Amino acid sequence: MDLNMKMPDLATNDGVELGVTRWLVAVGDVVKRGQPLLEVETDKAVQEVESVVNGTLKTIHVQPGQKVPVGAIIATFKVS
Image (cartoon, rainbow, N blue to C red; front, side):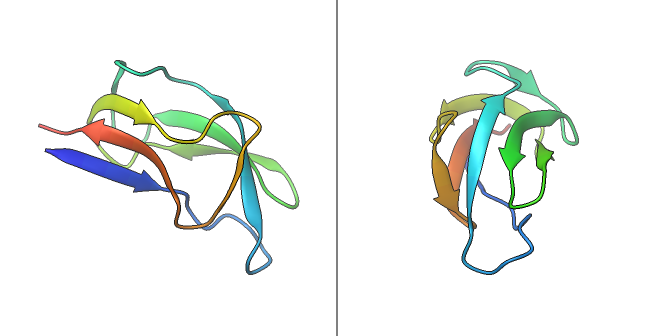
């Protein structure tokens, strides 16, 4: 089963787009719930975003340097 991960609400201002600064995992990597996946730049700081599932990273939808709104799909995982 595939599961889409959405950009979490880390910003203090509504409507702010968040920028991906870097991915800490690559497509094909097996990840565990709670494992840091990527770094996101908010209006105040850079924060790590953790995995919400155990599975394999199948697709990265947002590349470093891109900004997306909260709720946008940022990655897809293969969950068993």
